[in-house]
Length: 114
Length: 109
Image (cartoon, rainbow over all chains, first blue to last red; front, top):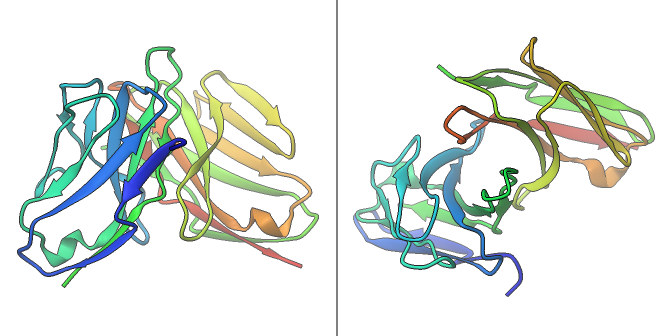
């Protein structure tokens, strides 16, 4: 693994189903993030984690949950998917200990909720 | 509220120069980032400005004026591979990135 990986690459999901998007990084970054990207809108932060064991809510957290059991993994769960959660989901990480907050992104998960 | 404004779309000619502007109104400022995003791919880091002035990196330069809440990304000697969306993002007082919607740059031969 080099950088950040996400799985699955894409998914079609029936409304009401539960879904977990996976994210793993091997850069030992302390901070991780989940964004959604919709046409015509900027990246919107769903949840973040500044360090293993802690999480926080972003701009659009409703309907999503996260956990950060260790440094490398940051899964995003949709408890009961709805069509408005159709989007492209990006996971990102950054090393905030050095002061520069540059975020590095995974390849994204394209989710279609029907 | 917090707001990042950039043009939706721009068109330029291969070999030319293009300037993509970004204006921002945020609660606090801890730096401004430019990212490049090719269609269907993830954003990749281009530049970071925290002090006023111009930062040059090869064909790309980024300028910041904190007093005006303004930045631009300058791309020189445009190549077809520069066709992409360019995202402006500001790190606010809570150290959260606030993103613009992006500028889609179309390069014509």
